[in-house]
Every structure is written in C-alpha cells, then in structure tokens.
Image (cartoon, rainbow, N blue to C red; front, side, top):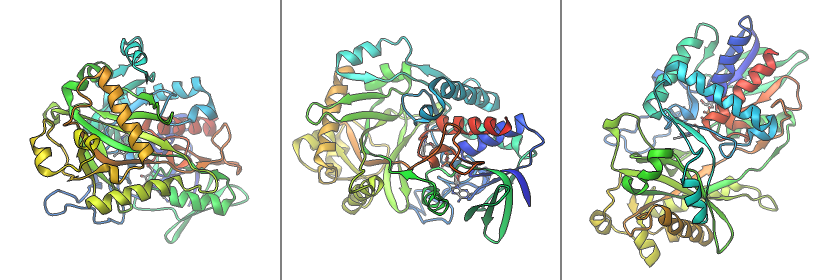
Length: 454
Ligand SMILES: Cc1cc2nc3c(=O)[nH]c(=O)nc-3n(C[C@H](O)[C@H](O)[C@H](O)COP(=O)(O)OP(=O)(O)OC[C@H]3O[C@@H](n4cnc5c(N)ncnc54)[C@H](O)[C@@H]3O)c2cc1C
C-alpha cells in the first residue's frame, strides 16, 4: 500500500498535521498509524474498586490512542513561547505563536467554543510577584477541561475519518529509507510513502531512540523536572486562579540559585496518580463541569535537573527518585507542610485532623527521605515565597504529594523545517524533545503539514 504521507502517532501532533494536510492538499493520500485504540475504546481499567492499581495493559489507554497523552488531560492550551517547549527556537517566535493561535481557533470550531481564554496581559499580579521575588511568566491559556477536550477530539476524528486512513492498534516497528521515500513496517505489513511524519510522544520515546540510532539521526539528552504536588484550599489561590486560571511563577532560590516553578495548576481540581512503566508518580486534573469541582486547588512545584557529562541519563535520575518514593510509600507519599518543616513524618491522624481534605489517597510519609536536599530546600523556600502573594500557602496543613516527575524525550537533531538529515522525514511533537505541551505539539503538526503541502 502506497501513501503520499504517513503519519506515525495520533496525538495532538499527528492529528493537527493530518488536519492541515487534508485541508491544504485534499488530493494527498494520507495514513495515520496509531499504537493505541480509537478514542471511544480508550478506557483505563482502574476503577478504584475492583482494580486499584495499574495492570499493565498492552496499550495504555491513558497515554495511547486517538488524542495521544492529551486525550484525558486537563486540556490547558498555553499560548506562549515562555514554556511548553522550544518550538520557537526552530521556527521563530512569531510563527510559533501564530500557529498556537490557529490551533486554538480550530479547537473552538470543533466544540471548544464558550470555554474561557485567560491571560496574564496587563494583570496586577505581575507587579505583586516581582515585589516578592517571583516572576509571573506571560501566557494566554485556553482551559478546555477534561470533558470538553474529549468532545473536541471526537469532532476532529469525525471530520478526519473520511479523508484520512486511520490504522489503530497498529504500532509501527520500523521506518526505513528507500530511493523514493520511506517504508513503514508494522506487525506483518509494510507500507510505503513519499514523506513521513513521526509524532510518537512520550510513550514512543524508547522506540524513537531506536529509530534515531538505526537511521543515524543525532540526539542530545534533555532535562528532567522533579518536585511535589501542592494541595491547598481553593480560596487561598482564588484571587490568582479566578483571573489567570493557571499562573506559571518562577522563583530563584537564595541558597542554591536554582529555579523552582509552578506547573499544571488545577483550580478546584483533584490530585491523581500516574503510572509510567510501573513507576507511580503524581499529577492533577480539573473539570469544566461545576458538579465535578472540589474545594481544593493543586499545582506542582518543580526543579529542573539536566545531566550531560559523564552521567547523561536525566530521566534515569528522575526514575530512581520516583522508585524510592514508591518503595517507601507503596506509591505516592503525602505529607503536611508543617510536618515536613518540623522534620517528622505525617500520619493518618494528623492528616485527618488537618484543614485540607486530600482529594487523592496516598500514604502519609516523609518526603525528606526521598527528595534530594537541594530540591527539597528549593521547594520549601518557594512555598514561603508564594505565601507572601497567597497567604495560607505555607500553612501547616498544606498537603505535599510526592513525587511529581516530568520526563522529557531526548532532543532530536532537526532543522528549521523540523526535518531530519533525511529529506522528507519529519519529527514533531513531544517525541522530538522540542515540545512538551498540547499547544506546541499541535502547532508543530500544522507547521510540518504546511511545509509538505507547500
Ligand atoms: C495526564 C496528563 C495531563 C496533561 N495535561 C496537559 C495540559 O493540560 N496541557 C498541556 O499542554 N499538556 C498536558 N499534558 C502533556 C500533553 O498531553 C502532551 O504534551 C501532548 O499530548 C504531546 O502530543 P504529541 O502528539 O507529541 O504526543 P502524544 O500525545 O504522546 O501522542 C503520541 C501518540 O503516538 C502513539 N505512538 C507511540 N509510539 C508509536 C508507534 N511506534 N507506532 C504508532 N503509534 C505510536 C502513542 O500511542 C500516542 O497516541 C498532559 C499529559 C498527561 C499524561
């Protein structure tokens, strides 16, 4: 079977490249190969009752399938070059922003209309933050919410399914260069194409590495982010979240001059566990539906670590810390801030008596036995700094869940067209290591589609 373009991976990167290609060049024969299930068949078996822990499904419905890792995400599309990836370093700042805005327009047309676009532009919080040694990064954020994000994906699929051939539950095993293009081999079948776009995200990171090794494409190690998820009564942060929804705030620590930053803020949301290759870490969600809102807000505080020489495995370092917390806590550990600063472990009783009702069931423990001193000191300093702009953040009862780890793919050597050294082979989205977010991954898909369509 021959195609003009084969796209590997149906996450935001793959979906938006298919969308733009069929729009600009409707005569092109396009196929999308996806290791996971169609959207309606994606279902994680953990129900908290019969199945409490990850049972290692052949294809993880949280990370794989139509919609990619973003399908059950909070659907926060951050329109900014300040975080979420380094796409602008390849294609330029104006172009990157323009593409993120275009993606937002498509999302609005496909079911997102009516959702709120928050912005830091002209906000008084910028000054208040600076006065307290905190830096509020500029961004606009469209919050679709987990529920509307799903509807947008459903509508995009219904629009694409007649124009693009989808192969679900079909992991690609090999990509090879031929005289006129590429071959893509799945279990038992080989397909050929003129141009190939690889968009395999975090879940395809190991496979991406093998493709780069086999095809002689250079890569460099990336960073890992380590920290905790903070849970506080929503009222403590309400003045910020009501106006900005998500505030990305950076603090430079006095002790080590490390940057600690807030990440993935979920007003009135819930804390959730996440299983990546058997390692349980923590994350957060929030819903648009008011019936699903809680009385708490959660966000991560993260410190970046990047190793290069002689130790290069930043992800391995993050994994080891997460494994240690899993060993001590049997999963995620939760600790009251007051217990952490007093150097004692939290227990069920103290958590139960606290003001903050946990939205996630974790093991009370001691995070100072897990997180490196430098990371932990930075997090404690930042909590006190945040307390100055949101009094109550450093309350004894503030809950800290650990560990939160953000892994990044190795960075693939790409030119300003996101093309590899092999002509016609493009690598986009989180699998390329240059994007780490829904908006950047989607924008990279539109960018490459426009390059191909000419
Ligand atoms: C729980 C959670 C919440 C998140 N919340 C947000 C948020 O609110 N805002 C935000 O900006 N970002 C969020 N993110 C990150 C965001 O989801 C990713 O940055 C984004 O999905 C990356 O898109 P992508 O297309 O590059 O990769 P992915 O979305 O990972 O998609 C890659 C696809 O490729 C498939 N694949 C992998 N290998 C192969 C193969 N060999 N053959 C065929 N198919 C393959 C996978 O099955 C997957 O479906 C969240 C992530 C998670 C896990």
